[in-house]
Length: 121
Image (tube, rainbow, N blue to C red; front, side, top):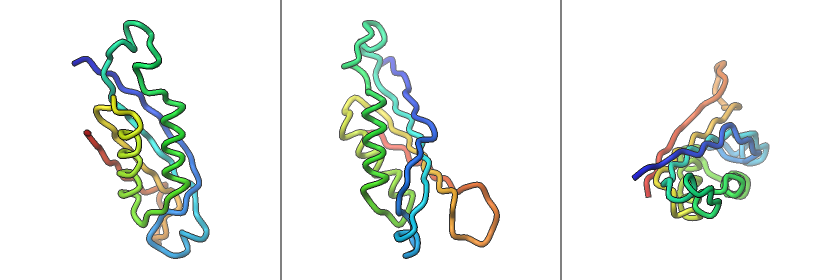
């Protein structure tokens, strides 16, 4: 089966995820990448919007999960995003979600912590 990939890169949202109580109060920015593998079907050959994943709608699904839920682990957050996208768009064959958390409460200097979860429905 021929497939193609839709990628939403570096989507930024404000959320309250983290293991510490302060993180639930203060919140911070989270950056999300979503790689969605979908079957080619008629989307490529016939330019059929209904046969693909509308990336504007996918962005809204990601935004809802990040801004309206709370998770202690960004691994769980990434998994929630993958599951929500696959539930909304049954044509997704693979969803790889990366969550980056730039303001991590550890005594060290780094750009961000990142996790990647891959889901195949």
